[in-house]
Length: 337
Image 1 (tube, rainbow, N blue to C red):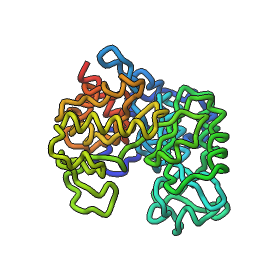
Image 2 (cartoon, rainbow, N blue to C red; image 1 turned 90 degrees about the horizontal axis):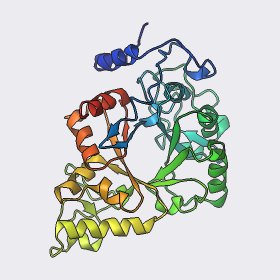
Image 3 (cartoon, rainbow, N blue to C red; image 1 turned 90 degrees about the vertical axis):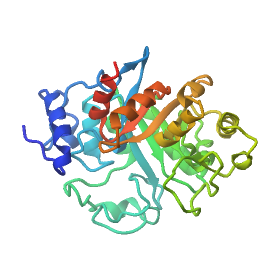
Image 4 (cartoon, rainbow, N blue to C red; image 1 turned 60 degrees about the vertical axis):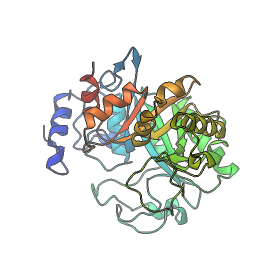
């Protein structure tokens, strides 16, 4: 079996995938059929039982082996075929309300066309290809839903829309996801848009409310205030020196939960999770008290001390780890057992 790697760093990861490979069983997943090393049922590997609870490892941007462009239909097909428990894709609305599977606001530099996604229509993308993996065109939400429907894989939609969602778009999104019968979750940083989604489970990414980024030196992005406890946070309590770290963290958890109490998950960057742990707050355990799960993003192949990061996240009550290197994270998780 020949595996095509993007660069030498992919070698170990590709060998892991090849070691798990078995003959093809699901020929209907045609987007991944071309030059695709087919893996066996990875659901046990990607759902480790940690401290008596089954966790999930989520394939970020439809990435399992790394052989296909992020957010491509072939990448998603590979995840579904491997029975990955969860696959994440990004959804952007276009000018004609088509729901494109794409991460960035603009098509440059990753595709053969330029322009802002929000200014283009579905017809404009008929001949557009990814620059890396030029045989792969762009796909739409209904394509992904058709692929995931009836499988063992949960679809995680990262809704990139920041402007207020219209009723028509909210309806279109929920209708498109209906065939998944609840085996789906929609996440966003825009809680004002998630409130409009009443027929699908929702997950809140509180990055615009607070996050820890010690390397950030500018105040143009949101939040604009660097609080006394080291988190970027525009809430008044973030700059009140009489608030202990524990008091501050608990107050903000309650505040942010109140923004979107219907959220069944929080999706939080792992640096923020670790900063809260320094205050004595195990965020995953704290959220579980309110029936809310914690998903941590994004662990990558080259994340420094990756194995330690994975094991610390589980120790802090994280239920889902979102990653570009699912098999490596699974190996890291197994080392903790």
